[in-house]
Image 1: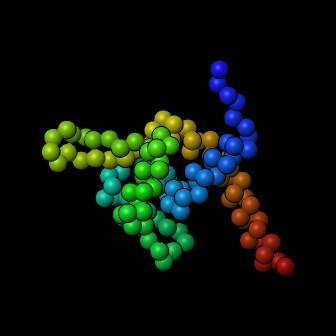
Image 2: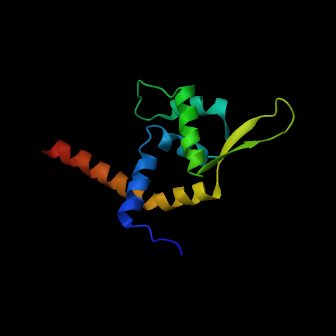
Length: 123
């Protein structure tokens, strides 16, 4: 018999997963299709809309990828078993549905941010 997960626990788990500084950037990058490890850094650092001074490093990327693999949201695949065969990361089916289910929350967040910014300027 499986135990019912409480709403609070589910929300805490979701928050913990998304709290990683680079998790949203990695998931967004993979939404466009599979990427090799070496392509992530350029893809993510060039796409940062905020122009953040601190850039994604290889160590932090490796840690972030590991967390997302453990959560079964991404998978590391090998194109060839031969020596030198390239490895790439992609969203799993679980990861794809995760992003789809987040769309309403992201839409809400965009609306919230837009309203917060317009309220700040009028007070």
